[in-house]
Image 1 (tube, rainbow, N blue to C red):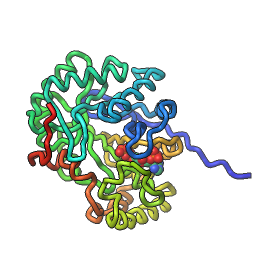
Image 2 (image 1 turned 30 degrees about the vertical axis):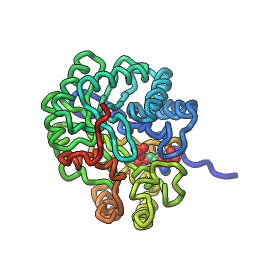
Image 3 (image 1 turned 180 degrees about the vertical axis):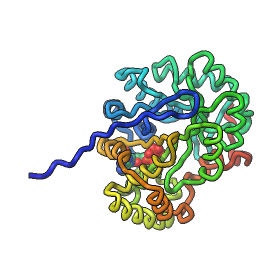
Image 4 (image 1 turned 90 degrees about the horizontal axis):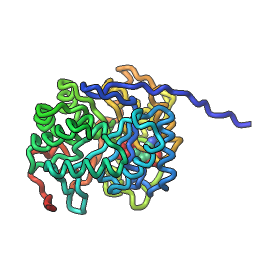
Length: 352
Ligand code: ATR
């Protein structure tokens, strides 16, 4: 008879995110992939079921955006929320990306747009408040003070509890924080995307802002996506430079190193990559996404992987960010990130 795999019961701790009183589970759940993008979209029933499963395991912090789908991701999460106790969930969504097209993104941060998006998200999610409302991408044509002014009003009206920014530069974070306290900054942060450590992380620590790393598993790379298994057809990964051609071949060497270290820590490479992010500080709450219950269980178990300072150094050195081949996003997406805050848009941004 085959032995049953050992299932460890993990108690997911609650941590403070930012300094305004928000408390979330130390591990969040990124819902983006539930409506396609990396894999084919799953059924609505399966999507709702994995959200409920995550909640029952102790994950209470769920992340979506109006642009995922678009709209369908919020609708899905809204349906799942109907079956969960609202007050025990920390619901995060975002506004600001009107759309993504082949040459770039359309971003918008005018006060009227912020308000209209918030009201539409509340409707789609079927809730009367959003716990954490992020500006998804900063609109360089609108002073951040104007966008924040409207967000502040939404907080005063009780429609939003806490405000966040995503892919904002340190200067934007400071200016925004002066208008209304920023609770969390959401950024790509993982073993192969570490550039926020130089300036953004210190600014967040100084201002008491929480950090929510997205793509903590390198969009699945650290789970073997593109290495152990081929990229699914139509996946967004096909246009990510790190997952293509020569870059991918070079990056496979990094994966092999992680795999070796995972043996030492008696865990999977994905768990080690996630544990590394989880060890970046108390106010750091990653939001890995998955469409599979087994992977979700593995991600929860990564909370039990304990790393010393020496381990963290060893892992960081093995997956040395300088050796990573290729950009983290296609150029037409990356130009809307914090790195390019002071560079004019190359591609047309106006839709209005
Ligand atoms: P994002 O934040 O952009 O969703 P991520 O969390 O870094 O990115 O990675 C998400 C990807 O990792 C998903 O495609 C997911 O694939 P499945 O839906 O097939 O699970 C994959 N993933 C998540 N957890 C994983 C795990 N424990 N092992 C392997 N792959 C995993």
